[in-house]
Amino acid sequence: MADDMGYYVLMQGGKDTEHVFSGKQPRRAALKAATRGFTDIKLRERGVRRSGKCKVHVFKGSVETVDAPANRPAWLPAKVKKPKVKKVGIEWVKA
Image (cartoon, rainbow, N blue to C red; front, side, top):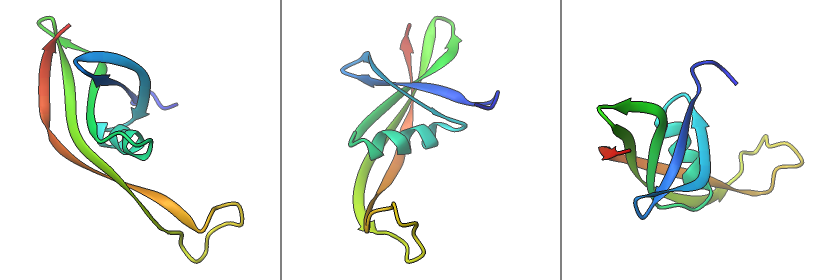
């Protein structure tokens, strides 16, 4: 993994879950979470704390099934999942 890779912990009900997604930007991690079927996505950024507060990125996500491209490899199925996310904002929560 690259040095500038970020790790984001999925939060549900105000608590951390065991799901950790990586990406250079929070949106990349949110797309991975949406692919797994999460719709209300709150990602706590690991290692970022200011004045005892953690940075949480909030997204709304969905996934749709679309046709695979015509030049797809043989192992790729005819239908693939395409995630979509929209950033709602950033929250600061107490650590």
